[in-house]
Image (cartoon, rainbow, N blue to C red; front, side, top):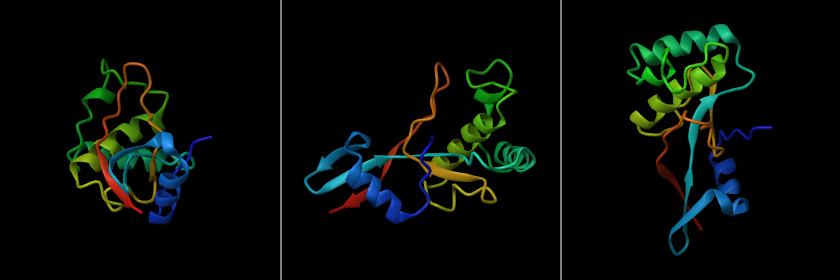
Length: 129
């Protein structure tokens, strides 16, 4: 089962309860690695429309999900959408608004990379305690 994070409270709770997901950067500060991925309950037509926008006007680098790319899998639209969504998220400030795609995307702390298909991430969201 995949965990999806969508609220600042959920992010804070995860930072406090999941020490393996955080890296201490200074006393009292924890940074959390996040990826923007497709929601598992999003319908294929909505995901395809979001991919088309992200890879077109949105400016995502969708080369890795094209034929011959390390993330190419025509049978897994959720994975393709996740790659496009995550690239857009990274390029557009890593904000909640940059991970929405008509409510077909959500943030997760679970790295979606598999095999040669690597999903880049930055350590960005910071929780202070």
